[in-house]
Picture 1: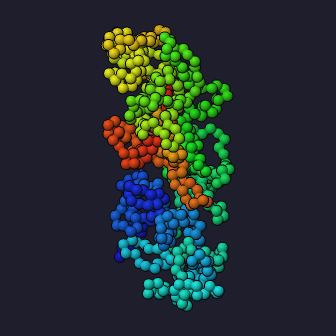
Picture 2: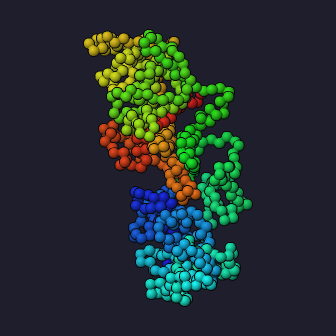
Length: 564
């Protein structure tokens, strides 16, 4: 007779609405099927959720392995939420694994802890379609608590142990506490027939839970010494005092390591006391991009600044006051013609209305959108411009004629909103095109201004200066999250929420999460008319946050970042 195949068991740590699976559900996969997977490196696993007969491809990041014994104990609990809480806390589960028949315990019944002895450990019902069922503890009450039970060791007409009337209780493991730290019945007895828990292998970057006495703590593996069998863990205590600190400069995580090291639950920065605004900004600034470190290291040696030249539109030449800032708040007239604007359009409108120009190409530019408080947002959706063309925003530099594409010599601010050329954008012309354009009766009274050109510039090639979007900070009802681009590909975006979930109530803690968000690319490349018709609450994944809640946009110049 062939040996009965074994299963590997898991508990889900997060709800996956796409698969209809809640956090705290138990699932399994046949051990043979697991070892024969076509793609062992796949980030999903075809598991069967207990209570169903078909498999579902769940992300590995939401699956935590269980022993068969742990799965049976957890299955005795009524709700998935209760199972997940007990799995994370783990204290009761570990105690239950050491209990044997004959151990003295206290059992909770109607809010009261009663003295008793374990007489039975096992199932109360046999599974119908599932390979396992919940395991309960049968306790015989003793001493002054005799008679406070609910049965005589019988459950649904089946006797599991024998005791006096109303002296028996069947309870799950979280209602059982051993009366002694190390009961004598533990010394010589063994749990026959129960599989041993295999030793788990660790890798640098793994998030772990470790124990100091009976207290559990969270940390990350930073070093392995395989010869000595030791693991060095970096951790921060709940009161915020660091157990250790890295003194040397640490470069940002490379794109090739992001999915392995940074994505998942309990990754990123853990939120505490409404700290999401600071958590999201730290991820926003420092996760992947190195030039912000330069600002910190050299702030006292040389202040790197973006020069914004304030242009007086009523003068014939540029050269107004110069302000130093990397940060710009976009202001747009309330009576504007924009319906579904891009960041490019908003920046151009704001510079036009305020009479501003860039004195030079910035290495970094931080833009904030026109919104105020919880309720006021000028636009329901804003399309992030993956590239920001700032050529026309520079005060001194070669410009391209919007009609013929040759070197421009004049600018007409009065043509800015003329839909004949384009709905937005600065209108720059060569001398020939300017003369033809302003022959029209509607434009014959316009007063174009002469552009300044760099000395010795040849008109053979007119360069375009563009900035790349690499991070977006979003806010909805006082809660901040961030999107960060971690690599060169269009789909290399991650989403960070320092308070994605919470375990416990007043004395609990927030669960941060970093995850991929490739769905945003589909919306970023979608035709404008189709995007305008999208209902925000029906947008896939976290795309709604990016388009509807965007507040601060971060752009960088790949060329200038090398020098400034």
